Amino acid sequence: MDYGEDTYTGDNAAENVEANATGPESNVVTVNASAGDETVFCEAVDQDASASECRRYTRERANLQAGLGVFEAPKEMKLGESRDLVLSVGKKANAEDVHATVGTERAKHVEITTQVGHYMTATLSGGGFDITPSGPQAKTLAADRSEVWQWRIKAKEEGAQKLMLTISVDAQAADGSRSRYDLETKAFDIAVNVTDSERRARKAQEIKKSLDAGTTVLSGLEKLFIALAAVVVALGGVWIAIRTFGKKKDAEKPKGEAPKDDRPKKD
View 1 (cartoon, one colour):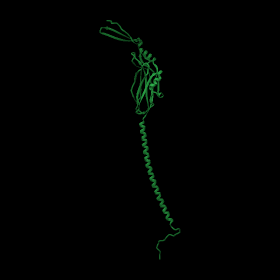
View 2: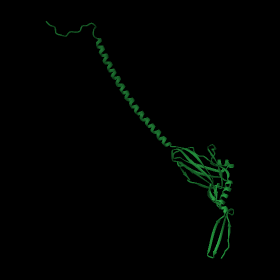
View 3: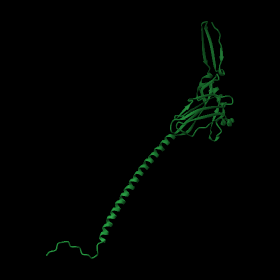
């Protein structure tokens, strides 16, 4: 028995669904993709998609608005130090409000250009840091297309380190939910120099101890040299006294006096 045929029109009349019943206990549904909904490479998302999806993604990407992202990242941190990194995103026309969200020290702000859309995701990563929250952070933006992301970063490795900030505009699925495709993705490197102040303090203390030890050794040697010098002076004084005494004794003898003969006389 023929129960008839129901035809449903999908996105842009791309999908036709036929329900054919062959009996009261059997209902087989066959989905046929029309020739206009074949899988194609879609430049809007740089991925393969159905033709109907690609048309939707292309329109959505064309309707993205010019925007900007603003953040203030530390150029230097101490090992073990924690800081907050705030990213503010909004329309380019609302640049003042976007900057104000980050803080008043505008000279320290980093401004980046990005498109803004209904769905956006931001990710902050870096091997030399502990980052909370970790992984992609997805947000749904209102009509004004303004949003804020915030991370807590802790430096865990010394030296020249790098943070990477990735911002993407996510496509919408046919039902209006977030799609797995990105309409635009941009990545930015943030250079941070991490120093170990405690290690420097320990090194300075070690140098001070070495200098103090060297001073102690020099002081001991100095005392030894003084003592040796005193001995030398004393010995010199004794030698001079001996020489002086010998010369005085010779000077007391009468000049021209014959030496006395103590030998016995002969009869």
